Amino acid sequence: MIEDADRVAGFIDGMTVETFVADERTVFAVERPLQRITEAAIQIPPEDAARLGPDIPVAKMRALGNRLRHEYRDVARDIIFDLVRIEVPLVRAAAELALEMDR
Image 1 (cartoon, rainbow, N blue to C red):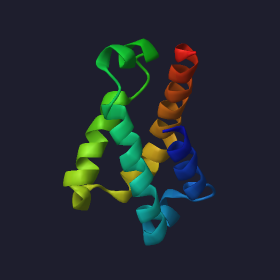
Image 2 (cartoon, one colour):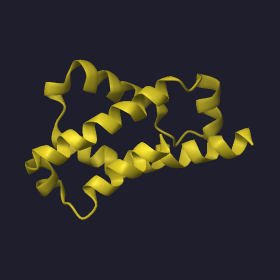
Image 3 (cartoon, rainbow, N blue to C red):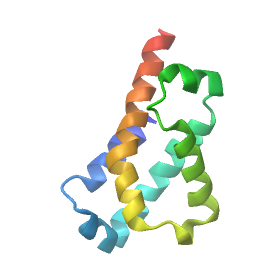
Image 4 (cartoon, rainbow, N blue to C red):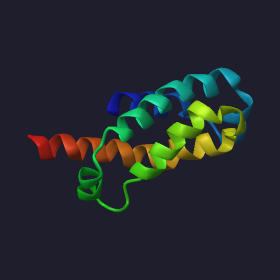
């Protein structure tokens, strides 16, 4: 999850929403790691997600995974960009916190 979060952050680094939306290659490069992040979020038990705090968008990541897998044609590219820019860093921080809690 951490590696994929870093990967997608690197892919959009320096981009605006407009350049991202227009860059099909980057959009496709971002979607696969996002799917892996959402798949990992599905594996987090609800009680563990609750321990990570209310600001961690685990449920949102789970829902995104379903949309990327089943409704991929309807997922707006600007929404993907915002998720990578805003939500993925929160999920990454939660993954780091979870690793620390397990030590």
